[in-house]
Amino acid sequence: MTKREMFETIATVNADNAEIVEFCHREIELLNRKSASKGMTKTQKENEGIMATILDDLAGFEEPVTVTELIANGAGLEGLTNQKVSALLRKLGEAGKVQKEVRGKKAVFFLA
Image 1 (spheres, rainbow, N blue to C red):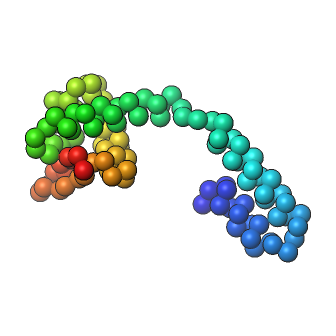
Image 2 (image 1 turned 45 degrees about the vertical axis):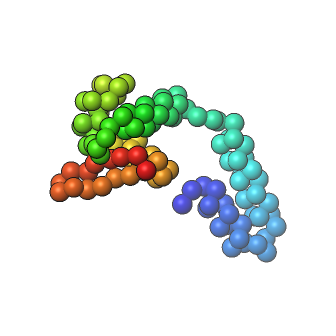
């Protein structure tokens, strides 16, 4: 449960106590301001670029590929670990841009 969800729950449970409700709404507003002004971190920006590269690379393959094959044969993914690329492929899958298929013991990926 996030802080925001916790404050919303506390405000709902204590709806009859105006002081608690007001406090919770103030804290939620502070959380909203903090997240709105924060923007993307350096790593998040880098990951966005890597995900764009992954999508471009996947478009160049005729067959679904494993993470290892993607790193070895893709452009711009040299030096990245399998774990990093796997995590970014998972995010792309959640966004509906990449699909995963399990073949035996190996997972292969392709554009959705």
